[in-house]
Length: 401
Image: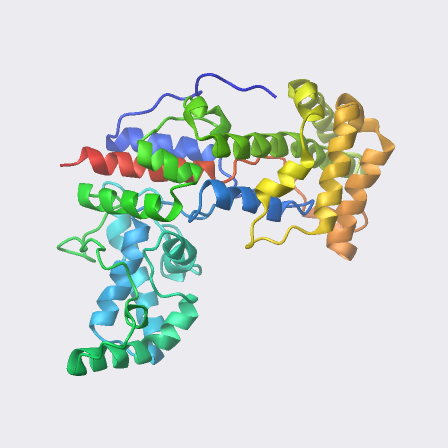
């Protein structure tokens, strides 16, 4: 395990071409295509939520955090009833594909390829994050919101007509009261470029809701730098102690458990006698083992890991904990030796079979036919790429007058 004093990529200027290139680079390090073959997703997501709350790996651009409320506020102003709101909102979201893709800042547009056939709408992707950042004030799911609008309209009318002081603000407030207004020609003209006012609002929202997280600290301190992984950030030494501790556990978890994913793929390649992939993964395990710091692993407190990663949103099951603890033991004893360690191999196979049952690739040839040869071996970076995109979008907004 090797910490790096400098980030590998310099911070870029915010002209359109440079920003597009930098966002494409971020995509190279994303986790969107990563697989959870060994049941580590709850631990990974717990780290991600603690480091970068409100984000997800399928988010693209920060201005969607404003575009979605703008859509629903506009529909609420038209008093679209609960029976019609879902269909109207869908048409509205699909309508935005054209102006976004035709803008000068279009990278990350939902539906750019699928068009009107888009299945997962931005509102579905950003709904949870809008709540986490306090931009969405309605407390339920998006379906709850659709179903509650008739009642919300009625309560608002009662408040307006009778001035009922007994009505709680939470009964009528669906969105942040200081949400910036949409652009003048919304929705006909739109891009992902934030205005300065919008950037200031989003900064305040993130810091207020998630100020103790790494995302909150980076936003508050306006610290933007390009790095492959969050623990390689050049300002690491300035992070608060609690964040540094969390990152240390996240780094160890990412680096140590990646070896189990490589071994998993190696074992599958052996079953199908795919010698080219076998050789590639043997080299991969050797390189992985050489990069680990045995002293740090031997001093890694797993009870502290479970303490810092605890998250009510993600139930980390005992089987996952036992798997991690046993794998760490084998790696601590001999990282180079795990490749041929029968117990380590058995641990990996039994874990995957326990999760997938008859769909296990170890016993199901048809499932192996759908295997690329590289399932789940991408290093975990805990949504760091999307966090960097958020920071870059904010920086670009602050540079605008």
